[in-house]
Image (cartoon, rainbow, N blue to C red; front, side):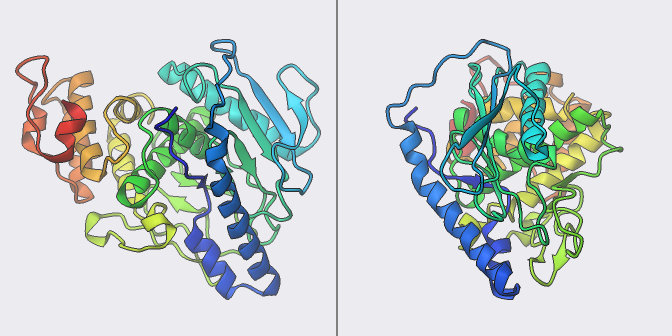
Length: 372
């Protein structure tokens, strides 16, 4: 467990909360400051979860969910209120957290044959009603944490299964590539979670690539907010434009890559470039995102990434995976390569050719260390 990273991953980025802290009314500024503070505390405490704590084996390929209620406090996990086979709660956030984590488990089990977060039947724990008007949801390295939202800018964070899928996918990344959560690598980490979250939602609703809205966090904003969701994978940078929360800063192309010290180096910002590439590839490879594009993305994230992999590493590796799974030089591999080129990440032509032997092909840069 020594390679597990120590960064709390939250769905609402720091830049949005900081804009809220500067431009909101007195109550909104106070809530933004408190959310930022509690997020930092959860981050600081995350390392302790892994110091000498073994992961108990659960029953393979059976969902093991537990939902806790923090009751407005900030101590985790809170009071146990719902378990497998127990009485179904009347609390909508408890039910949504339970059903959402179940949907994520089912997706990864049925589509990719993965047995929970760690692929060893890890128990899925979630805490709802964390803090007072806590405006965030996050994976803290051990469990899910959901705030209620303030009711005006943000509604309950359990409402969109794409958010649940996004956050639990951070746990999967934690147990596979252990990607860092800073700069380009952190944006790749965020992208893998967005791609996972949207696929979970599409799978649950049986949506094709043309049926899906490709939004993360639909229904999360309060009625007065000028926005549809927190991110658009189809059109990054267009999800919201609000005087209190700010304007969606996500670029859709490498020429607009944002260099910033905020948001852990723009992890929730520059992920838009990769999100757009996944949308482009999945839209052409359909009819369902998880069948071809999703398989390529999952296999690449699981087997071909390292803790400091970057955008070009991932783009190159998906092209290679596409060739391995669906034929070198074939239509699938060409579509994946074209999607990357459209967002400013063209891949070397040599990746379209099958390796001469099972020993792999010579590659330049960081990708060589990843593939070979």
